[in-house]
Image 1 (cartoon, rainbow, N blue to C red):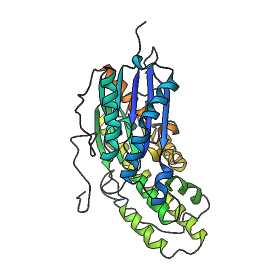
Image 2 (spheres, rainbow, N blue to C red; image 1 turned 120 degrees about the horizontal axis):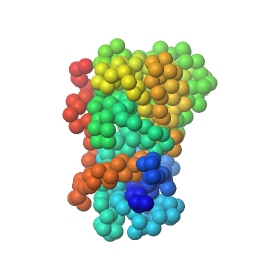
Image 3 (cartoon, rainbow, N blue to C red; image 1 turned 135 degrees about the horizontal axis):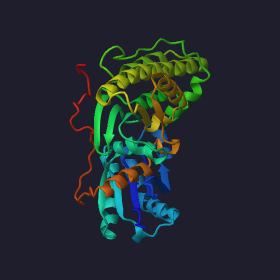
Image 4 (cartoon, helix red, strand yellow; image 1 turned 45 degrees about the horizontal axis):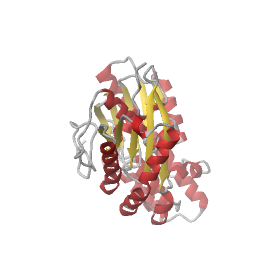
Length: 357
């Protein structure tokens, strides 16, 4: 029996230091042998957000320990590792550089191939860690730094259908939580407050709701939240605003996803109608339930990664590394960190004010 490849994945694009060992079974299904994630929440919460210099320092202090633990937990010996895959972008460059440099040095020290990974591609393939998932599929990637609809045609082949023209959905959740006085990272706690509130109390804007195809915008919504919070005096008003915010997000995603379905079908036909939701915000229970219901109505199969693979982790980096290893797509050790790195290199840049839709 041929030896199955064993991949070490490393992730340090923002405020999680992560390492994972991954292989596959005889049928080609991935097996996660270890997945270690060290969060920096306690470091950044007093500042209300991620401080890049502090994040990078923490990565430097922990990276060797996290990688060692991932290897130890997996039961794999260092000389059995076949390749090292590290996130090269997008992300905070001071953070990316830590994991990227460590991965290169580790690969060189064991004389094995190095593979540079796009963090977004890790999210795009993360559902394959726990599901049998064939290409193509429609992906909604929603996280703290990214929000976009992608036609995932194969490993390395992505066509963007829509993207945020300003802020990411996860950022909108975190900023709203901060305005409501919730400690960082507050985005996931919005759900808890919303359960206690009246979703019809506040009529919030839905930017580019009726134009722009399946492109997204959340900056105007955040501004409206800011204005309302200046006049909030009671906890119940906070609960009502959280509920109204969540309702607005659900309405936006429902409409934009319906449009994305139509765009996906134009490009791929009506067969293989699979819809994948990935990224940190994919762990939101209400968003999951709404999108599952929408998929049932539109005859789409809905697929979500396990919650442990929604946020930043190294197993998703390792699975991309595994796919690239099998295709012998290796990188040189001078491969640079890329703070900006689109999955669809041909897509038009749509960031900032004045964008015409």
